[in-house]
Image (cartoon, rainbow, N blue to C red; front, side, top):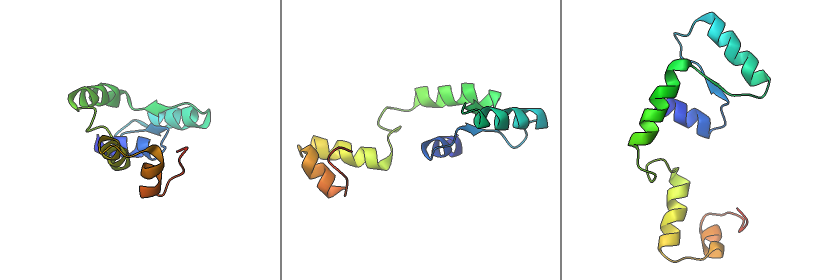
Length: 90
């Protein structure tokens, strides 16, 4: 499931398991081409279960954790942006 999470964070619109039938792979390609998302049927329940067992902190990306830590330190948005080479608007 970590691969799926990483793929989604990287911008993937879908994920098909390697043992999926050809018809499902074709359906996934069609859905993504139409701008929709597609995930193998077996992934849904597993992702929901994994998400429910993780704390909100565990679901954050490393950058999100860094920013949360900076907020906890009392840094301003401007200071956080400078520290992370970001625009203040980001």
